[in-house]
Length: 258
Image 1 (cartoon, one colour):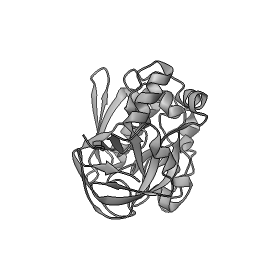
Image 2 (cartoon, helix red, strand yellow):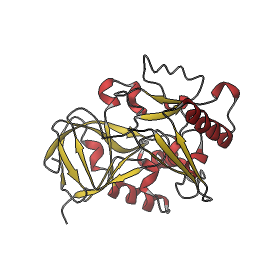
Image 3 (cartoon, one colour):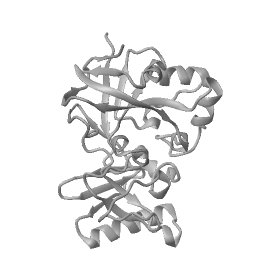
Image 4 (tube, one colour):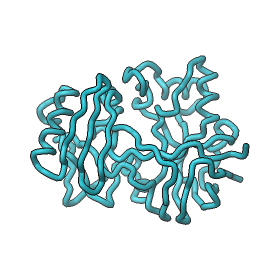
């Protein structure tokens, strides 16, 4: 089978669970639809919804610092701001984040779960079209970058360390299969095509401690950044791309590069 798109995922709330898609419509320069448009910022993060500025991931509730978040399955309606949080043990919690009372209950739930310090007590963050992507601190262009993971690279890494590595650790928007392992890392500055649409490869994705967290167990069980560097001399897995033309992407669509 030709190289193709295996899955499409957005992460509506930074640091929380994925939303899978069979199809999405991308707009040139506008990032992955619905991705990282909400977040829970630490109270001392400096986030100002009236003047949103890019902030490092350490100022948000994210797997980077809080592996317990992997125990939650979440969903949010971007129009009504109704949010569901389901704990691994099965308890469901519902919050209306459009109302102060609902926001207070949601932030109290997360504060208790993570045992935050008083100055870190979270606030719900939204300031569309601002996105809370990890690389937003680099530039506005990178704020709207789309993350792509080559499954062959993940498999090769797993074989190198003698462990099964779940691609979900890397929280990519687009997962593709059929390219040679790590060939994507050499494409920075070049163009690729997905479903016949043009994308520019902006940057390799340097991996952080968030990838240490097992998405199934919510435990830090593999030091992924260190192991990648040990075996390959860098800590990169995946690439950031920018849509140059708009259109539809479907699971199963072709993926090609020079």
